[in-house]
Length: 247
Image (cartoon, rainbow, N blue to C red; front, side):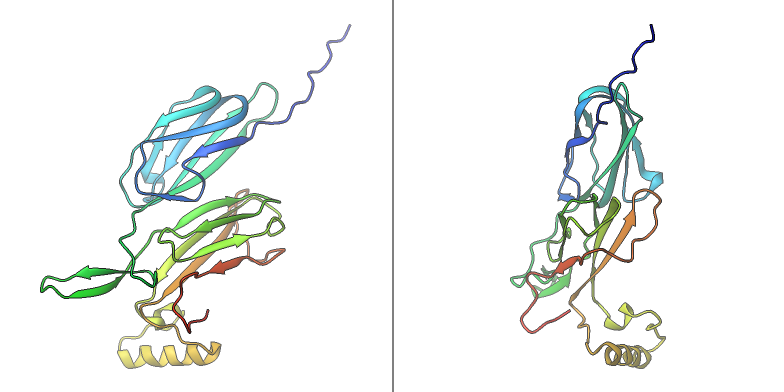
């Protein structure tokens, strides 16, 4: 008598992970991952801001959840990845992200600057160079991400992505508006100013030094290719931009 094939079961999924995907935190001592069923955990690693050279490999485990001690101090974005395998389904890979950063106290207008006291007792508003944040946008799921300095946020509807996609939001302090435009650099101030003027005329706007820009990238988790079109719009907000400013 033939032995019946085992009943098909749903593959495991990540039920919870700490730190949460896309979260900015001031410090870290451990990571916790919870699956929807008992699994074997393997290939666990954390890649730090310096890239693959700053990879920490974590021990394998078995069970519904896994906790591993991990501490770091380097400011920047970290990627957690690993594999989980149940008794019947192929291995399932997962990825999550967090950013280590403690922004200085912001100015009252929350414009991405902080007040610094100089040696002579005077104060200066200084731009905060905040690190990027990343988060996985799953297919058919709405989501949001907030920049590490809190100045910029982005939201997307459940219909925005056809494939699982990593969203990266990197706030950029504007110290020289001409530098935001490709080819706008010059060996003298007059050249840079002309480049700014030409670019501003082309788009009908001027980027003020001391403001905030943001670079947003979307990358497919399956093959690393850039996503350049979306089924529905993504919404980028500067919730505390000074009155009179516009994108």
